[in-house]
Image (tube, rainbow, N blue to C red; front, side, top):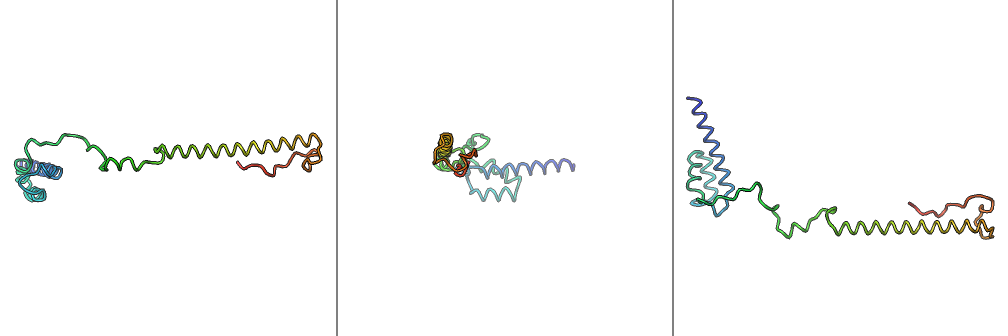
Length: 151
């Protein structure tokens, strides 16, 4: 007998929870007879009677919601979805980063070429024995690396 009462109590609780979830997730147009807050209070204070009353008289018959796992969308308007994009997903940002990197590479390459030309000119002057060769170049010392570009 105790087991039977326990089973009825468990069924009453499950039915009440299902009715409460159904009431809270129903659209405004699907609730009839009373406002939503009244149905919630009835279901909470009288679980068995309130749950049965909700399923019989509280919701519109035949207007079941389509069953989907999750609602479509993320809760933001369509125009707001496209405004906030992570930097690594934004094509404009990626273009700017690539352009800046390309410009920095070109500048570094240009400075390296200038340094190489200057060194080659110093080496030619030293080999030719011209009087305007840098000091130490005539003595067999390698040219100084004073204005070397930073890497």
